[in-house]
Image (cartoon, rainbow, N blue to C red; front, side, top):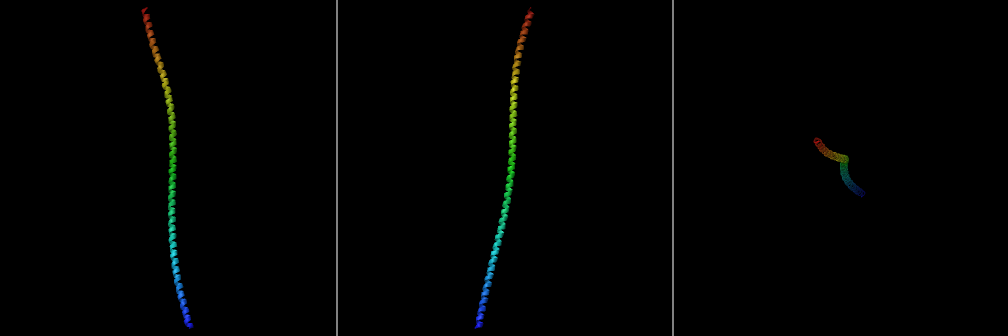
Length: 139
């Protein structure tokens, strides 16, 4: 009976060992599945990190382009201000030229009026000279 009991115990131990072995294999398989899942998750995180890097690079490119556009806008604004100042200067010069022309027109008008008076006086003097000549020729 001791042999049977020992055999039964041995058989029970073998069955428990088989169950433990099966359970260990199942546990190992489960851990392998979990490890594979973690590897997949790690790969996904790496892909996400790469995508974030791409997005960040793109953002930097857009920011750089924006800075270039902003610089260009500032240059255009400066040129506009320069052109506006040049136009203001030209406008002031044109006003000065216009004032000079008005003064010259006034002076020319004065000269023309003076010449008219001189011509009238000359005409009157010629008439008077003619009258005096005629009067002298009579006597």
